Length: 170
Picture 1 (cartoon, rainbow, N blue to C red):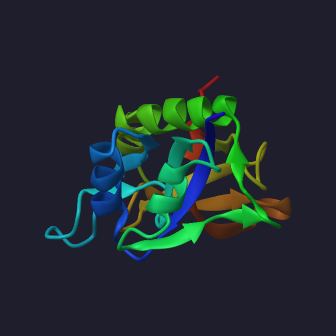
Picture 2: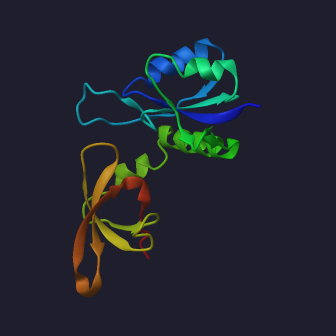
Picture 3: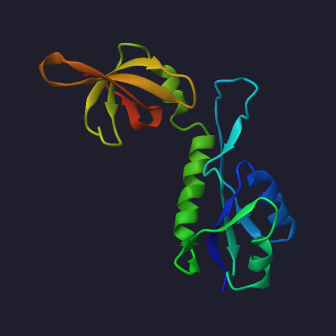
């Protein structure tokens, strides 16, 4: 019976292995995201899970044993003796999330943020707090906000822009 199992790759061998696995007509999921690199010559598409591929295969099959010995493979991710199995629902959730990221959902909000603008933190450890947008940072949609604390104090915090929502003016 086929299961989604996790294959660990050697550093930067995901693309090579993805095509090797697909050439063997084995279903493989390799989530990649578009990024805005600091260095303009750097890759603009990167693995969402660097060093890992999801393979839909029977872990006891000959094909699974063969894949283990491909150049660039570190091995199957295991819990004890059994390969780590990933539920179909999680694979679908990852697909939806990666598609949303690649379609720019949340990125347009980041571009509209200006220094001094009030924002709400909607996810993460500071969810529910209000902040003031301070600056866009280098890299992939990172920002710095000034977290509003007691007695009008503000603390600078760096976070992913997807955790923010522009506060509606009342």
